[in-house]
Image (tube, rainbow, N blue to C red; front, side, top):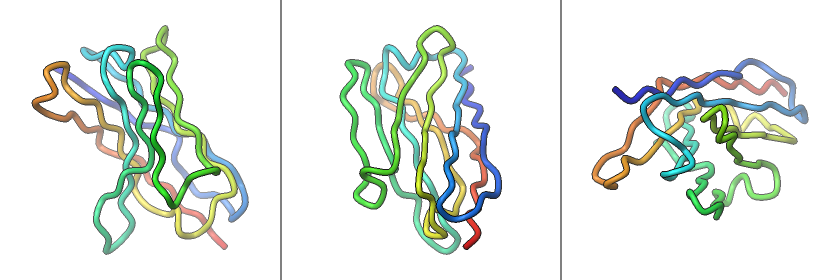
Length: 117
């Protein structure tokens, strides 16, 4: 079965950088869209960034210019590099992969990011 495992979260100071990783099994990011979402306490889950198989990327308005989504096809891993972090970036970050037939989404369990000011 498809598994997505996030890692790289932690506690950082405002202004610092962090890179999250999402290792996939039984699905390939090179063949389907991969995305990062986040959920802050008391808020709905929101899209942070999406990377399509062909390389096109989308970024949420709140993070444009500060984050970069990428993938390593050999490692079948999706990354999210985040710079100039603020307390508003605090939340649980989830990795998502769309099924090949686009009928469902697969989610990881999330990794916590806490930014201290």
